[in-house]
Amino acid sequence: MKFLTQFLSLALLTGCVVMTSCSSNKETAEQKPGIEKTVYGQLPNGQTADLYKLHNAAGMTAQITNYGGIIVGLTAPDRNGKFEDVTLGMDSLAGYVKGTPYFGALVGRYGNRIAKGKFTLDGKTYTLAVNNMVNHLHGGLVGFDKVLWNATPVEGDEPALKLTYTSKDGEEGYPGNLSVEVTYTLQKDNALRIDYLATTDKPTVVNLTNHTYFNLTGGAKRDVLDHVLTLNSGNLVPVDNTLIPTGKLMPVAGTPFDFTQPTPIGKRINDSTDTQIKYGLGYDHAWVLDGTGDSLKLAATVFEPTSGRVMEVRTTEPAVQFYTGNFLDGTVTGREGFPYKKRYALCLETEHYPDSPNQPNFPSTVLRPGQTYKSSTVYQFSTRKE
Ligand code: BGC
Image (cartoon, rainbow, N blue to C red; front, top):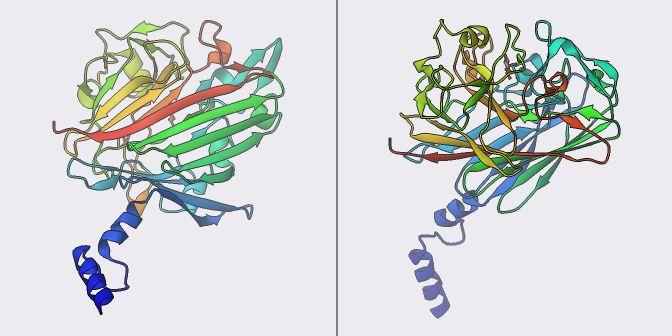
């Protein structure tokens, strides 16, 4: 009897009902960081793709499939603590297989463009697929965004998903067997970290990135023109009308490309007097990041005033391609059949400069046997009042 009385008072104190899971315990269980695997679907070749849901103690989730290493969903809280998805994405694997403009995907071997799909390395010329006007874009016809990666979930306070893929010598025209390892980690501090590693058995070129389309309103409620952007960059990589770098750098001061101070994205995006804006149909350019060294440095800060969401992007890369979804035209219908229209998202693709294999003055993207390609980027979410 004494034990029963003690048990009941303990249960009352903690708000629990006898022998069933009490609500406070349930909440604790739901907040426990972890990673769950489910079958995502079958690819046309019969292979099975899986979906991994990572969640941290704060309640943030990242859903990632091993098909293309695609971030299928990513939630972040608004200033009232409401978690909503901050990316564009599809409802099913079939949607991704049918084709998207690289929503959430891992991009490789070469993120961005290589002029005319050709480059020369150690005296040998390599020919790649031409899949973007006259140029090669994002690794070719079947880039890293369209292959099935091996996945290993890593449990812990900061759950992670390790993805590996071996790109064969000659794949999409690139030389060397390239072993790639990409790890997504959902950190305690509401940040998604991406670490890239690669090694090769022949000299080759590598430039890996992730192509997530962000819209911080949550649920892509409207375009991103009111998002306020700051870029840690005083120089742009100007391009020609096929979006290939001219080879020179352009100071951003006094141009629509100056985001050194927080500026709404829409403020100058339609400045038709600017040749670079005309070529990109808005922003679709690489900014050279200020500061040097291999450590993570702040590249960009994005603030969405209505939700209060802030995203900070840190990277070890020398540049960031800022793309404002200029080619979205509503023909791709995403989650819940929602048509993704022009400028409904922004990408901040951390990478080396476009067309570096053909530009001797740009930082090199060559990887040789015995060397290890290393790159890291962190997308961190927080909120601000105003
Ligand atoms: C490119 C855009 C392209 C988009 C989707 C971006 O990285 O810079 O020009 O339309 O990717 O492929």
